[in-house]
Image (cartoon, rainbow, N blue to C red; front, side, top):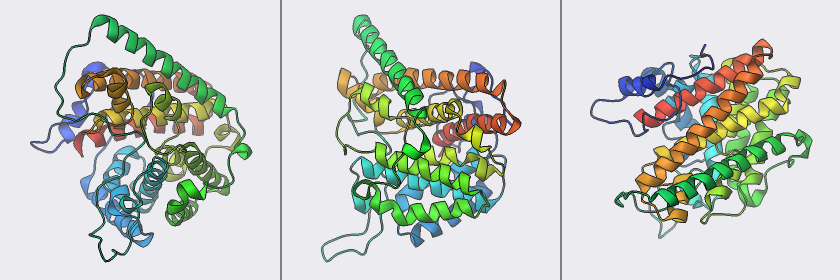
Length: 363
């Protein structure tokens, strides 16, 4: 089992380099502060993906939301080789994608299969956007920042990240029964069949009713937080919302997928929930940086500061590293006095982030 500790910078990217396919360079900068994956198993990933594809067709999801998730969950959950458990984890990731994308105004045709009309073509297989908005063109040339502008922008982003962390802390003090009883149909109605099926899969792992309810609460919070539709967002606004994102349901189900259970008191502890949300924020930021087209925070920085993609991506990478260190510091402090199940969960979050990073590098 992986442990939470300092990651040597010299080791970053080595696993991604070994795992990458010949001739396909890693898309994630090796300097990112994040662990490598513990294992990769393409055969197991293919078996999981087959299950996920069949499930997606059965609940009428388009191919995009489930694309590539078999390999991601194999990388992110090295403690289990069970295809069924891993398929449940992939379902939750797909549902998270749909909930987040629907809240951001994605075209329903990109999310849900439907019979083509008289003037329609085939549904697009492209993946829906994750939290964030498309920005400047990917082929814009880089240009150096002026020292004063760079310092001012860095200060603004640091303040925005601090505000996001404060919101994570404030939000975790809200009791679970204060969350909406079910997603707003106007925001997440198209995800209902997939959501119900994914939750049924969690219940059948087996998982306790409380574990299922924890995952359900994350889905409902994600749907509630995705309001406001699409459109440009300032970097500070993106960061303030980014900790409730497509990864939250899957991270809440980590113990159920890996075959153990957090106690009710541990799972409800605001300190543990803060660690979980910091991990979700770091995962969302890494997705933005790895995206071949600027999205999320990268696009927001490029738009707000008039930067080309490379410069905006470097600033987003700095924010990612700060969020990873915040998670690592908080998780390490919590683990020092935690029970074994909580320590295993925190270690699992660290391992999950490493698998997510490698998936972006080699997929």
